[in-house]
Length: 108
Ligand code: 2BA
Image (tube, rainbow, N blue to C red; front, side, top):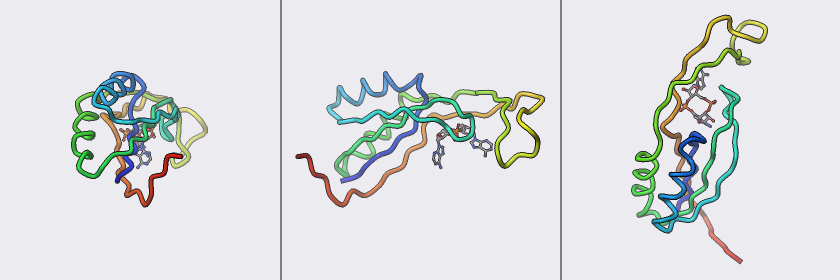
């Protein structure tokens, strides 16, 4: 069994969850915050059999779009004291996906 951890944009989360649920995947949705933009995003935990990982990744890819976002906030690794005087544009998404081996799966 695998645990898929998918970081997606909030705008894509509802349709993605609907799509996965219709195909009977079980999902936990967590509200999360991106470390760089410091804005909200969504983390999904999806436990699946090994042979379903590729299908889930395809469904995520189908529902999650790339978007351009701008920030004026400085990060810890940038020089300066708070704000960037010009907008910094970054491309976010479609999705960041981690796939982990699951040692044990117990529902009591
Ligand atoms: P954020 O950390 O808010 O990052 C938003 C977008 O900003 C990233 O999009 C990337 O395009 C850009 N970015 C991030 N760090 C940067 C840096 N040091 N310098 C310049 N640009 C930077 P995505 O790569 O699509 O990531 C979207 C969200 O997925 C991230 O939001 C974060 O919450 C999560 N994520 C991405 N990679 C991750 C990782 N390796 N570990 C944990 N979370 C990750």
